[in-house]
Image 1 (cartoon, rainbow, N blue to C red):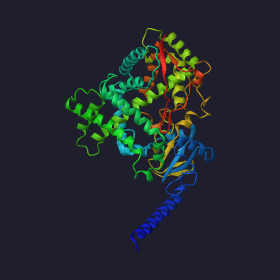
Image 2 (tube, rainbow, N blue to C red; image 1 turned 90 degrees about the vertical axis):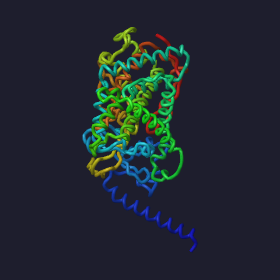
Image 3 (spheres, rainbow, N blue to C red; image 1 turned 120 degrees about the horizontal axis):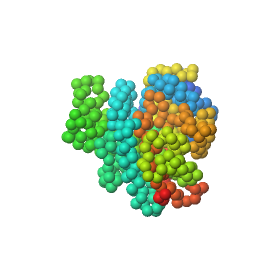
Length: 494
């Protein structure tokens, strides 16, 4: 028999075995998992999930299967949770069981389970406990970090002033100012907006966030089991993140050379001191890899999320000038024109606070959440979810849940105001997720949003380059993250 025929027969037999194994495994597993569309061998629910419109495909399946269902991304079963009740039941009521983590295939090559965001088990517990302590020690939620944000907001005002009322894109300035706040914590200093290394870092940050959310990444995250063996655009995100990791590695090396264990300057110093303390502990997770990956997690999350929310917020305030005017009226009444805003003002400014909440809800920045996993076999609504199964608690469906949000579609600050105009709390406000995996930097992000919005609106009127009715709010990308549309604006001194 010719070699080609032998190889062909072998491949047919091999693929047949794969299909049989797949079908057998799925038939046994599907009896335990929530219902969902029947998967095909190897490609899963290829027919039901449009690879470039993952979230909209899942929302359509929700109409048929309800708030809890199972889909297959290739050969991976994913349990989807929709709406406030299902997500709360998982992340709050069964917090420990749903506290596991899965890494997007596009990011797996970079993180490999290291770093506080993508770690699991004991590694995650050690890194999260340590990181929360250090962030608080460096002022998260306290006066010291408030002063850093206030200082950075003044630098931002100076840059805005230099535009002389001419149209410009706010991306660069907002990224730099927000990034400098987290840089002051993890690197011990802020960067000048013209620093070449900092500019390169900002570009990498922007590029990586877009790469994670573009159509190809959505496609790869679903069919990684088939595509991981082939070259393609999915390797680009790794190259960008690797350059960012190398930047952090250089900073770590520099810190090591000048480290004073009695006087830590930043997060990196604190981590290095902890590494030395635990160098003889075989179970310690304080090592170079976790230092680099956790620093990258903090830098990334601490820059892009707040920056993107501010960008969407500016666009919304130009689309709805009456909202901007009402915010400025409250700012003038409570703070005035001369004093720098401080965080204590927030409790006296319910309308401004409500608008910021609604900006976060509308921006829907991480619509599908970061993937969770169950830490053990878990009973949930009459089903049994096997240990390690991926779970997507769709934050977007909570932020738009009509049973909890008065006006879920569109932009309505009144969603967070009661009949007396006071701020109204809402359990469905989950832009930072919920449960044990809630965002580490929530307190810092909320403080930044309030101080940046109030400082800018105190001094400037935001003016669109088109008529408000012609402003398009459609995101540039809508995948892992929601990327605000590109636009220009003018800032006019008040």
